[in-house]
Image 1: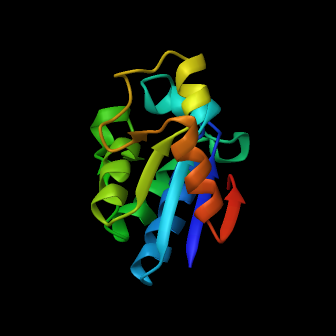
Image 2 (image 1 turned 180 degrees about the vertical axis):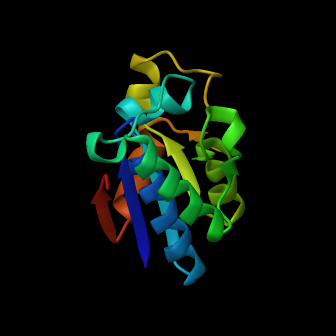
Length: 144
């Protein structure tokens, strides 16, 4: 199976969901690509990552981080942010290391002038390469 996940939101929970699903699909021996676009690209280039309103409070985020640490996902220790938190940039590195292909939408990378600002794990595409990634996907899922 060739899966394409499209992540557009600058929400830590959205990026987390897309990367975790991608890594699970990859573990099963499938080809999986994640395409970052719009807000997610801005966030990964250094803008602020946020959480969905119902997941934003300290208790919920602490609970999520503790569960993530139990699953051996990268987290910051409590003193870094005042409470434990998931290290999203390390999770990007982990997803890439497991064989998940991570791509930047060329239109949004251009609109936001992100040349040289994205993590090295995220591959820039031109329009033709993006078209090929989309055409080759057997299943496309837009943002979790």
